[in-house]
Figure 1: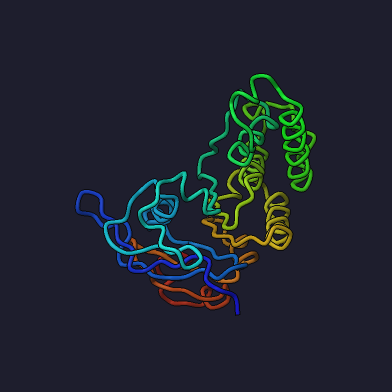
Figure 2: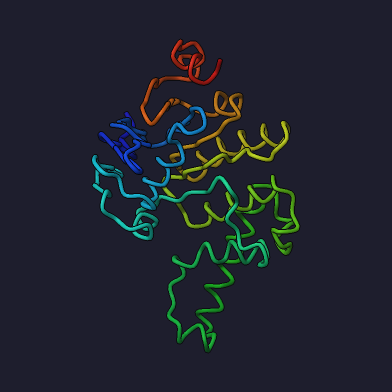
Amino acid sequence: MNKQALNFKDITIAFGGLKAIDSLSFDVKEGEIVGIIGPNGAGKTTLFNIISRFYKQDTGKIEVFGEDVSSLKPHDVINKGIVRTFQNVELFKHMTVLDNLLIGQHRNLNYNIFSSLIMTRRVKRIEEDAKKRAFEILNILGIGNYAYYYPINLPYGIQKKVELARALISNPKILILDEPAAGMNDTETIDLSNKLKELKDKFNLTIIVIEHHMPFVMNICDRVVVLNFGKKIAEGTPNEIKTNPQVIEAYLG
């Protein structure tokens, strides 16, 4: 039986007296793909911001592989192997795709500022390895031919793949995706769902995804958690969720 990768215990956060997340508890097992769905305003992105430590919950606890991370800063969470993408693409649009990925590897490059200034042989080797790694990820996602393009000149669907590539380059254990299929056509969405399953197995990932494209969610997820007004109203397999009366009333209907 897979161990727990993430565990949320009675998470609550309020803004101006309004509870955006209300006593939310669920877990994500290692190697699972778990979908978070719900109508607009349900608290999905707020939940992601809590996991990423951009927001600090008012009450409750978050555990990552059994370790309490509730009080960590965002950069500390990254060091625990949690990496996310955003609902709106957050790329350096006036740097090349390749440079965006090289920045994504920065925390894993083991050399100091002085060595980088004089470009020692060791630094050159590390940077060449980093570039090879970047091309490996880009090619896996089928966008290696865009390496020297600027993201600002690319279609939105390609930009989303670049952001996914930048997340993968930092060697995450847990990948958190906020609407990864947004801006993609049906063919691109099917390709992305197949690619994420492949990536999960190839890189031993645990994946949590917010997505409004229901066929995508139902095709890719092992389990789905449904939020409404900050509360969990259902949790189960995609087939269980599709037939749940509360879900149909709140969202799918």
